[in-house]
Length: 343
Ligand SMILES: *Cc1c(COP(=O)(O)O)cnc(C)c1O
Image (cartoon, rainbow, N blue to C red; front, side, top):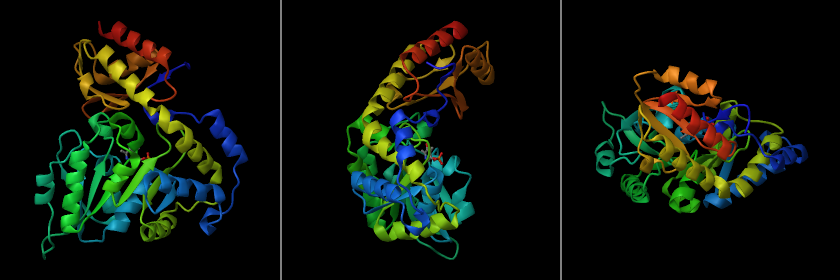
């Protein structure tokens, strides 16, 4: 347990000793020229794990998503997105800024967009209307408290995409948390998307980076887009090396984060001011509504900070994220702080 128990995000996870060692020892080359062996190894490994043809190491998940949208769409087109999705709400509008396509947000049941509504929103182009060319899905779903989107729903969307000749991009920033919670394999999830992105920098605890995966020609074009966006990095094996450790060693422990989140949710759900159904905490993210006579959300968060517990406000309440760097002592500290402040 450190000075603070930091539940703000799983992006705060520090690299493991093994990751630091891998960084120190990484064999590197100029990746823009295609000769950084460590990056190539990471991209091949990610492709193998997801069952996709090729991979592209990107500095961020946002850049990987931007590249995917840009590669799958053209101007005067539209992309269907889930209303609370990260790609629509938290990536500074790259759809309009970079790809110049219109996002069409669809309301959902905890991340699962109703297939009939999605289908009704698919448009054939006319002089007035942009053509739909892409559907974006997200799983686990960040802003739906880490919800695992049911496979039946994803398969129904895949069928619709095939019927209408659309692409699907799968934002799998935390897809390995979803795999761990549902028991569904990464290959099965990845097969839903024409492309998929996952983050190494979140629960998997690597310091930097995400991987975009898809068909070889898509990735070849994506490599050009990455350069154009300023994401062509040189001896980047230094930061790709911990990504290899992340994929090899860190996926198997994500169930611990998912379980801790559920336990924490169960302990705080009954406290005054909190609205939370622990049954809806399926992975490592807890989002709860907060309405207490004594505190506003910012006041409660600063009260927690005084107890050395860090969390963030989010749309609809407060967010706690469990990850490698919060242990059982951090959990107890958090529960005690909640009890002290709220009762
Ligand atoms: C974090 C996140 C991203 C983007 O990752 P960055 O590396 O922070 O740009 C994309 N999608 C989801 C669902 C995320 O949680």
